[in-house]
Length: 506
Image 1 (spheres, rainbow, N blue to C red):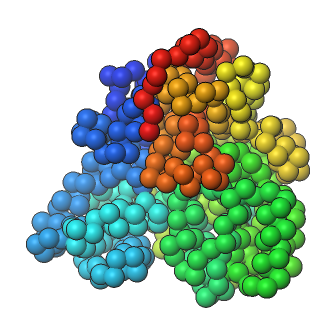
Image 2: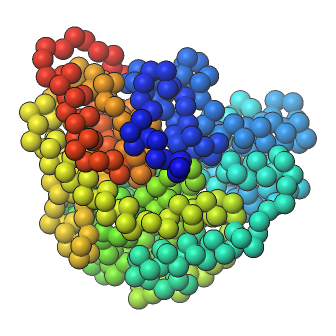
């Protein structure tokens, strides 16, 4: 039986499931946070919650195998009052050390672990928060499988890993209608974005970047904390396009970053106009298509680079992280970007590549089924009296999305909702919902989280100023029977249809 199959009918959502990995794998990239209170407790780092967690989303939670490797590194290399993190290559360790030094004003030390090229970075323990931010934003730390290989001092299946990478590149190229030599693989989606960021800033240095539309949290953090700052247009609408056009007439930028559609509001920018502006003002356009996927949308003709988190729909299982960049060979910056990405270290660990290749064999078929399920659920929720808003490409900027929809494509598997009377109803609905609950998206099983609580808990006012409610609930639809899935949402909504008692809020 596959890792995810039991979760279709028996999801991890009960209070006693707190801290269990999703799926049941030592390398799971999600963890069960079954109640609203648990999610708030995780953000507050309450021992009641954190003591139950051996894993989580890998950039946000140090996996227990990674922590074991850090401890070994600290014993070997750290001075008193120092801690260690581990990275797959010297280049990744240097990226971390440079970010750490810029943010903290303190140098970090790099030490060779002696296994599989892994490097330890030592830094002052009292600045661990800055180190954790670098680990999260850049996404270049060791994975759980690589940490395990180092701890066990075992050899690596390099040949099998190379074969798997070749198969994955071919699979991505076919789905994206691209040449295989224009596909580059990375250990997670954020690493892919960070690699392209370094490339465009290297080509066009000392210029700000542009973030068009409200993006996933760490994309914005990279643009804001690295380099020469960014112009941020959180709504990504026509008015902000006009503002961007005015800026570009006066100021050169290194690159324009956007998502299609955006996470978590599922809004699609006017990519035709954005691409025209980028080309007119000689700025690379970088599009994150993780939520649309290669199956549903053809974005390469208008972008210089398309970044994707392969952790999500491409893998589906939820037991491996990876990312990709696909370059447009007709783009004005193609040769320079291709050279910079070819020179980047190959960070995707061979055992992660093997898992990714296995998981992605039915990628297209799964996405097509998820499309159908998500549209049925979105239609149901759109017509429910207790649902105040449904964020889904069919209902948010549909014309902008459909321009790039492939024949036979759909709207993707992600949607978000706001409920009526959200302060009271959102926690109650979330707690009653019988689907898996935790971070991540694009899984073969439905996975729900209170997105703003998890991504922006310490900046809730900022998120709300950008149009993202603190009570927003994000829904990643899976392969369950659609009638059964809608029934689960119906049952949970029934718990908030009458007079409600007060519920915990962040």
